[in-house]
Image (cartoon, rainbow, N blue to C red; front, top):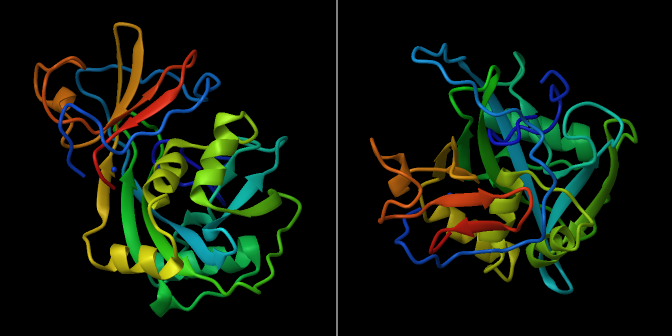
Length: 263
């Protein structure tokens, strides 16, 4: 699992578009705990770890209140990011033909649900900061699941599950009932506008997958995670530099705020 690189699943224990200066797609939440990762080490010549291929699958179904996503609860006493609510996923194994095969396998292993490879639609790709000692390059997929499908978790690494609308999942985080990593938080935020599984899958199929190459910025007491084309990523820029915004504010003593006009 990587909080900002997006892999949260097996092998975890060892380790969002354009915007202008006025945010459009924005979600605020209540105080978050101190991010469970160290401040990035600074070096003039850092050694960048190679990317390890990984996959995450966002399972969707149509419920009585609209589009629902499946979230899994990690064991609160086991490994990194214990207790977080996540999507199924993990690293690409040697026996996996590609990240699609990995996503299909992880769905079965972590939820007991079988998804057809041809039903998966690419949604996004996440790359961790170059300062991370272990970096998972993770493809996110959307996949439909029948409304009657039964989820089975192992009660070991995964101890609970819930089908929730994206809005309800974010509400529970606001209430402090669940913990979400930034890729999960942003994915849910960008799924809020869709009323049905077909709507979300059609949108995903009509666009190129969003690319999230993550940069962590700590400046003037602010902790921000930014992605292209945020103005703060230009040479010599600061968080206050006017221009495009694509960032999430992760102040440990305040709300998370995601700035992006559309998802």
